[in-house]
Each structure stands twice: as C-alpha cells, then as structure tokens.
Length: 318
Image (tube, rainbow, N blue to C red; front, side, top):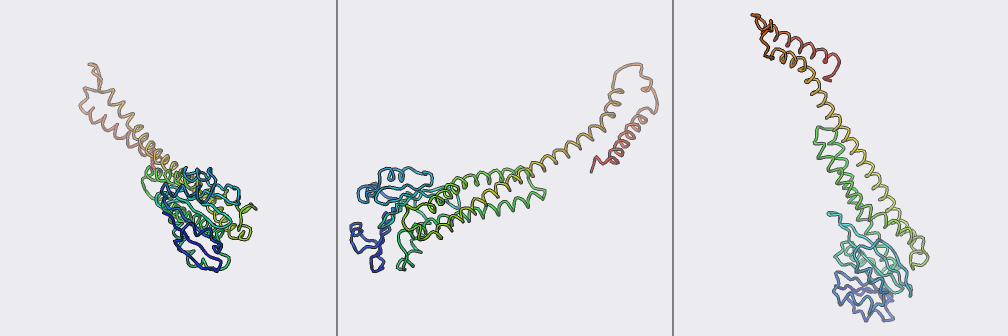
C-alpha cells in the first residue's frame, strides 16, 4: 500500500496524490510511504524513483545492520530498526532522503510511521518542516519506542531483587535473570548500531537538512547514549543478581550438608555399637547380662545427647 502526501510551494498540504504529481514544479517536497508493498509497488523504487539497485536490494533483504549509504543525485539511503515492545522482535524501516522528498519503506506495518504521520499532519504547513524534518521525526520516534522496553526490564529486575531477599524459589529466579540477560542482548544488538548510525549522521556534511537541525539529531544521539548506559547498567545488575542467587543457593546447600553431616556424625558411634552387638559370635559375655540391653540403649542415648550438646555449643546448628 502506498501513502503519498505533498506540500506545495504555498505550504498547502495535499494527501493521496498521484505519483505523476510529484514532478510538478509547485510541489515543495513530498513523503511517499511504502507500507507492506506489493511486487508492482516495489518495482516503483527503481523504475519510477530511480533509486540505486543496491539500495533497493537492501530494502528487500530483511534486517540489514542500521546504516546510511550516500548515492548520486544527493540521495541518501537509511536502514533503521524498530523494536516490538511486547515480543522484542526487530523490524526494519528504510527510507530514502532526497533533495525533493522522502520515501519510507517497510515490509510490515509500523506503529512509528503511523505516529509520525499523525503528528506531521498537524504541523506540516509550518515553516521549516520538510523531508529532513520528517527523517528526524522518524528517527526520534523509533528511539523513543526503545525506552518503555528498558523501563519494563528495570521494573522486572527490581522485583527480582526484592524476591531474592525472601524465601523464594532461587532456581526460578535464576532462570528469569538469564531470560532478562538474553532480552538485553537482543536490545543491545539494535541500540548500539543505531547509536553508531546517529554518530555518523551528526558528523556528516553530506546529508541535507542535518546541519540546520544539528541540535535535533544530537538530542536523538543523547537518547541513544542514555539507552546504552541503561542496557549496560541492567546487564551489570543481572550479573549481580546471578551471583547473589548463586551465593544463596550455595549457602542453602551448605546448610543442608552441615545438617546431614551433624546427623551422620551423631549416628556413626551409635551405628558402631549396634554393629558390634549385632555380630553372631557365641561367646559375647554382655549378651548374657540381664540388664545389658537397657545399659547399651542408655549408653547410646547418652552418647547421642552428649554429641548433640557438644555440636550445639560449637554453633553447628546456627
């Protein structure tokens, strides 16, 4: 599906115009959005707009690394990544920025594109709004949608930290921590290349409209720097939680082993005595004693109680 809007030299907004209208002299700039395009619409990229075949090929090969390529006729091709806030799946949003307009391309529906379109419709007739400003709005909206994902992860980590202080299932908590580390790694693969891309943009003199709006693009770069700091901070927190849970698991295991060791130590001499008098020798004088059975039981009880008291004094049960 194609969405075509244009602004003429009288700052008037025109929507759903035909592509042939784009070449009229009264068109100041335009925005063409390719949303889940058909094969015939895809061919327009090269046949009608004349974009470089390599750039068109990159549009069709899903999940290129975020980048910007510069072509003849002052056309600049951008590959951007959007992030699904629920599934963390990455979608690709591409756009061509030229001297007369901007062309966006995405194989799946994009919430960011929709939001930019709604916002642009309200301000499109203002002075200073052109295709470069649309590019800024798109970049800004994509980056803004990264923040809720990381805020959600931070809340999850805070909850896990609180649960770790209680008598919770450490195995389950550890599994959740590893899942969060995996999510952070997926986000990192998107945010870091986007940060590098913005650095190239703000330090490039080739892209029209950027130098006039350097503060705007620098603001996006600052947001990406904050995102990278949040990712690294959260990764460090997951590492701390993982170490903490491992320590808790080790302490619990040590407590169990200490209890089992104490019980085994107490019963070792009792088992020895029971083993001695369980032998089948005929000449064992104690077997003929009238009160021998009760004497042995008493000795075993005193020995067990004495060892328990000794371990208690030594703090083995603390």
